Length: 397
Ligand code: ADP
Ligand code: MG
Image (cartoon, helix red, strand yellow):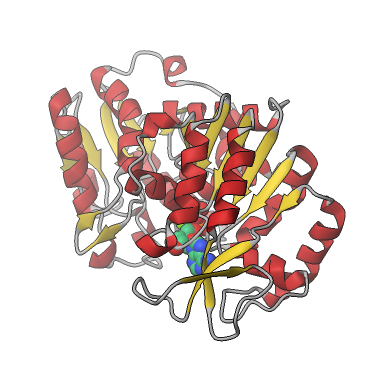
């Protein structure tokens, strides 16, 4: 993959950057701004090189039409605050490639940054139709001279601002994409052992796909989060009102049969009658979840067992919180695993938007871990051994 250095002298050049600025926003207030911070080094590098930096990004799922609930305006503001100490001014265009974007590009000075409005306001961004995506990519490309792909969290998506636009302009991978890929390579090519993978979170079926591949590579696979209940059910236990993916049971039975003792499940579970922070929580054995309760975290014994496996590893990849960490009563498992990751003598990687937010919310510093990935889905697909369109296209000349 070409790097920014390979693009030559960028002074006065219009550089379109695809960043991943998809941060949690509630009532116009940004929660964890980790993804914005992770995007800064590339933007600063380009601005300091005298480029006119034009950033395209998405926020949430506005379903192909403008929707003020998904405006990037608060992100532009935050970006401006973060770049101010560098003396870099940030402008905002109120559309994706329209009049506002074109005018703002016209007026952009060298060393300044322009953020375009949410690219998913345009239905062509995520279209399955290559011609449709190509049209939007042409409009984006018309705004710039070169393209830098730095939104690692979206490189697994074949979308206009990620994939198609790279075919229209001279292109390079940004520093964030390069750093993420380097870590993923370490996880897939000859990882130091023991290699422990911890999977949790809410998106069960998304994450089940990676298990196949990881079972062949990792020494231990620890399962937490909502996924646990599909595994427990597959073992024949009742899971009460917990999240369950019935249609995945056969696949999970297969994993359990093939895995030997590689798959480690929690032995105790924190349950409550309702999905509420103040619902009375109790700890039960994993094979004795009451019918009227739901599992919201791994229990304290499991937390200790998982922590011991993690702390003894030389390579750890963790994706997905162990429980509903947003509520203090159900954050214990996530905290135990996070703490253990900070003690790893080797490579520790945290992947996934919510996992990254969790470790920060629980008070851990970013540098307590070897690497905090900005891309959950992208890193999982890489670990699955899939080709990521947004990376493959950068390898094309
Ligand atoms: P990531 O973004 O790190 O990939 P996910 O998006 O898959 O993680 O999942 C994060 C969410 O999973 C969190 O909001 C958390 O509350 C939820 N979660 C974890 N455990 C459970 C559970 N037992 N039941 C319901 N939700 C859970
Ligand atoms: Mg998530």
